[in-house]
Amino acid sequence: MKAITAEVVETLVNLMRNILGSRAVDIILGRLGEGATGRELIYTFADETQNLLGEKGGFSSMRQLGRELARSIMSSNPRDKWEELLENTLNEFGFARKIEKEKDRAFICQCVFYEILEGKNLKPTEHSVCWAGWGFIEGFVKEMEGAIGIQWVERDYENEKCRFDFIFQA
Image 1 (cartoon, rainbow, N blue to C red):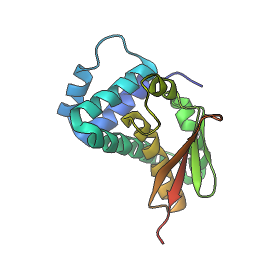
Image 2 (cartoon, rainbow, N blue to C red):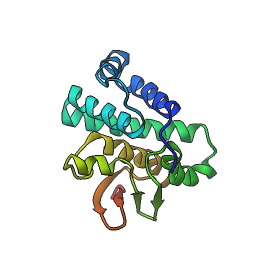
Image 3 (cartoon, rainbow, N blue to C red):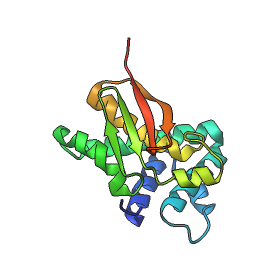
Image 4 (cartoon, rainbow, N blue to C red):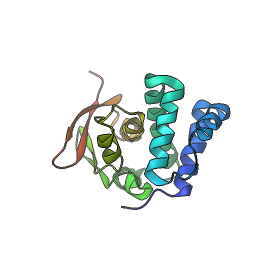
């Protein structure tokens, strides 16, 4: 798995400026402190977003960040590449080994944030950093599969996978 680079962080910060506005993002960035890099920086950014906006505000903002990232990637790539991009982008960005997609569900495999969550006694989706991955998958499957959304179902601790089921209109 690749490392989270400064370029990835810059991309996410710029997308977040479109979601929250520059002033809010500048407040969050001002709270990060010095020396944080990679996954710790992304986790702390999500943590400070949640501190500033509250739990639900942090969750929804980070979920929207994931959706916007997916839209940005899809808009600059041909549709026939989307499946591959969904599977591999989180690895390229340094967030997880891969996304496995099945007919009506997807799995985030070996998320780099799980160790931090576990150390803080948090389960998956109990922190806003998880919601960015949720939004990322959701952004893709809405366009690829016509889903109206996705929902987190469970974490398979043995295989290090979080499962998300697609929601379709009845």
